[in-house]
Image 1 (cartoon, rainbow, N blue to C red):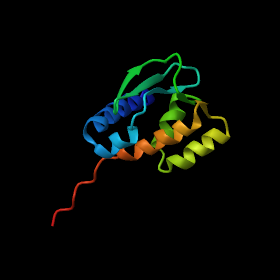
Image 2: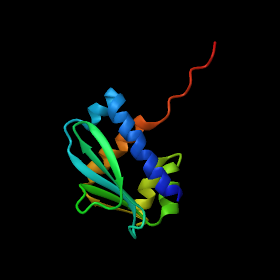
Image 3: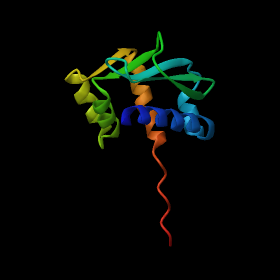
Length: 127
């Protein structure tokens, strides 16, 4: 349930950033593709549409995504995406086959670059 909620929130955050954040929009560029995050068994899955510098998402699987990241299960996917060092968590998961990447690996790196724009802004300290 946590993983499903995390994917839903990721869709909301990316959708908002694609409307309001110029740097995020620049990263989207002229890309037109669909990517997917899911569990290996496909029980939890969400796909994301990238088109016209906007991102929208829907629940479920997409027949032919440009790339898909599949986690061994929902708990592992949640833990990996919430890890302090996400890069290390992903690399470890890929090496031990807990994470499988289908499709274009270059686009996976592009997606990981997008996530840095989704961190909440820290409030400015009061003087």
